[in-house]
Image 1 (tube, helix red, strand yellow):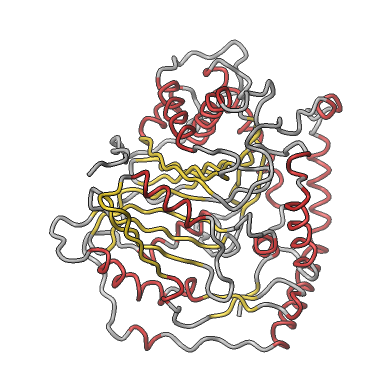
Image 2 (cartoon, rainbow, N blue to C red):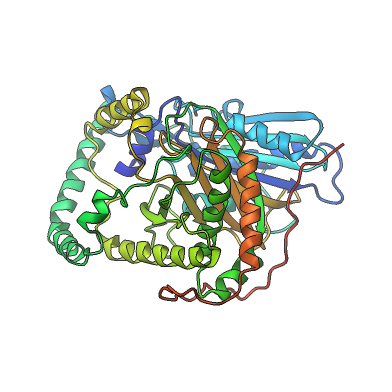
Length: 496
C-alpha cells in the first residue's frame, strides 16, 4: 500500500467527462529489416511480461470509504490485459493524418478507475508499414519526467530484445487486499504527518515568502488595473467538451539549438518563441490577435537529480509569450527575459512549494468545484489566468527499440481544460524535438493549421540575424550538448 500525494489526488478529483486528466505518448516503430510474420503480434508478445513485471503497471486505486480522502495505491497483481491492451487496424494504406485522427478519439475517453490507470493501443495499417503505440496514463500516477523514466521498463536500448524468463507469471504475487481500517489509518496517518511537516517548515516558509514579497516591486497596482497579470481573452479560452484534436510535428534539435546559441538563449526559450510565433499567425486568421501578450502556463520540475519516482513533483509558472510584438527578434529576447524571470522565481520558491498536503475532505471540495465550474460556463465569462499550456520534457538521447524495431519518434499528448483549450508538449528524442499539439476541438477546430504555423515560425527564426534589438535584455547562455545531431525525417501523410 502506498499513499497518494495531495497534488496527485487533485488530478483525480478535477477529472470530469469533458476534462479527462490523462497524458499519453504516441510512439512510431519501424519494423526491423528482417521482420517476418505479424510484427504487431510480436510487439504484443514482447510487451506482456514487461508490463506485468513493472510495479507501476500493476498499481491500482483503493478508494476511501465515502471518498473521504485520497485513495491509496495497491498492487493489483497481473493486469487484466483484456482491459488494458487494445488493437486497431487503420483503413487500407492509411496516412499519418488518419493516425492523428485515431489518436484524437482515443485521447477523449476516460480511464476506468476499477483497473490500473493506463491503456496501451497497438495501431497498424499505416502505408509505410510502421506500427504505432498509443500509451495513455492518468496524470495522478506520474508527471512527464517520471513518465520518461518508465521507457526503460518497456523498450530496449538495442535491436536485440532482452530475454524474459518463460515463467515470469510465477514471480508476481496475488492482488493486494487492504481493509477499510487500514485505508482509513493510512489516510489519517498521512494527514497528521503532513500537518507536522507543515508546522516544522512554517518559519522557513514565512522567511522565504517575506523575501519574495519584498522584491516583488515589479508587480504594481497599475499592472493589476490594466489586467497585465491575466491573459487576454482568445478563441482558445472558453468552455470545452470531451472532443479532442491532435497534431504531431518533428523539428531538428540541431536547428533549434543553433538558434538558441546564436541568440544567447536556451533551447526552452526558443521552444517558447516558436509557440509564440505560431500563435500570432494562427490568431491573426482565427479569432483575432489580442494587443496584449498571451500568457503560457509552464510546468517546472521540482525533482532532484536522479529522482525518477512516480507521482507528480512539479509546479506551474506563468510566462509571457510576447505575442504582441511583431518583430521576431524582439519577441525572442522578450520571451527569453520572461522565461528567465519565471525560472528565478521558481528557484527562490522551490523550497516552499508543496507537492503533498492533507487530503481529508479534498475529494468532495475539489470534485464539486470542478463539476460546478464546467457546468456554470464561468470559463467563458472570466479572463484566463493563462491562454495555453507549454511543456518541454527531456527524453532519451539514444534510440529505443521494441521487438527489434526502432522507435522513430515519440509525440506527447497532454491535458486541456475549461478556459485552456491548447496544450503544446515537447519531447526531445535522439536528434529531434517531437511536438505534440493537443487541443479541445471546440477551441481549435483544425489543429493542422496550428501545426503548419509552428513550422513557419521555425523557418522565421532560422533566418534571424544574431543582432540584439535596441531594448535588449540580460543574456543567458544556451544549453550546450556535445553530440552533433542530424535533421530527422518529419513524418508526413502517406498515400497508398
